[in-house]
Image (tube, rainbow, N blue to C red; front, top):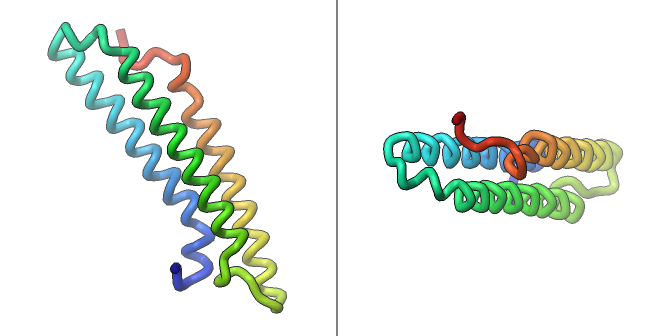
Length: 115
């Protein structure tokens, strides 16, 4: 699927970047619309559910990338460098999973729009 092992190693953080952009784009757009239209203020619960959905999907995506990396042929082999790359990929994916959970956990309880 992917040609280069280094691209496969950083793919979990590419997923994290996509989730980061998706979450903050969604929140900023919804807060801007809520500021312009008073009737949208009551839909904060819907916004929270959408953001929780995005966080859940991003965590599942990072775990999927991690599992794909564990089975990847690009990172497997009988050589010492390929074993090293496989270990690095596992650590990078673990860091991306921790970053996803740490950075996005606030959507569960923090105020969504400044009020």
